[in-house]
Image (cartoon, rainbow, N blue to C red):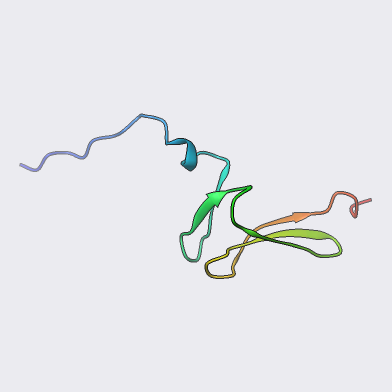
Length: 66
C-alpha cells in the first residue's frame, strides 16, 4: 500500500512570502523591490519580468484617478 502524501504546515521561507512576485509566464520570482523592470506610463506603473518581458504587476497611478 502506498504511503499517503504528507502535509507541511511550516511557514514558507521569507523569500516566498507575500512580498515576492512570481512571473506567471516563466516562473521567475523576486521581491517586489527586486530585479523587476519598472515602467511608468501616463497613468500606470508596470513591473516587468527581467527574464521574459511579461508584465507581472500593473498599478494605476492614484494621482491620475482624480
